[in-house]
Length: 276
Image 1 (cartoon, rainbow, N blue to C red):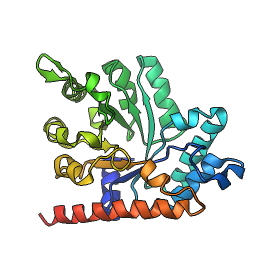
Image 2 (cartoon, rainbow, N blue to C red):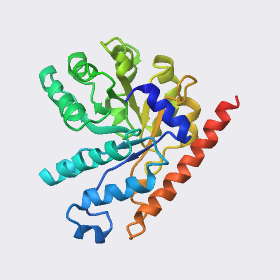
Image 3 (cartoon, rainbow, N blue to C red):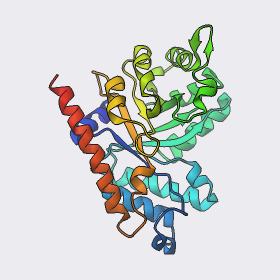
Image 4 (cartoon, helix red, strand yellow):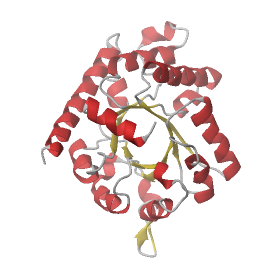
């Protein structure tokens, strides 16, 4: 999917909502455990109930890998279902990969070619030659961890080297890499006050922003400092706050209600922006 197609979908749906499909069998409604594939059954119901309200889905691969081959098969069925039924929706493999060049190429093939995701999250710690293999894929996007929402982000990401924070050095260096136009960045919603500085470095890149909802991030603050004029430039992710809105048989309807609440807030923000 191209960036232009993603922007068109945002404008069409008046939404920049990304829903995280982080499936924990201990949290899903108990009646689904009787299904042959409870993970996929859960995801399918969520997707069917929310696809008109969001522009992206983000399965965190750890929640699938934890269940071995059955979990991986559920992930495959989930991405195939989205691509078949809703090809207009942007898909993110939240895998946080990052390794030496040859290994990164294989990771990229796994997510971009075998599973046909539109994007994958990647850690920048090993540098240029670990990220460029992902960037080489046409119309695929590499979402680089820049400033994350967890408390441990302050251990390294905001520390200064030569009077400049590490996350800023990551951003500045990454835009010099080959095919850097295919880069997006993860910036946690709990770090909204940093977004203005981030936009000075990457004014037009899309930012994937987790942490709105269960982690306490504020949508209005994120949009105030992070939204750009050219293409909106934000994907706001909510996982637990949506998919676990209910653990009863009405879980999909409850997820849709939570999604609609966020979508309506986004619609207001987009309308205000368009009016000046």
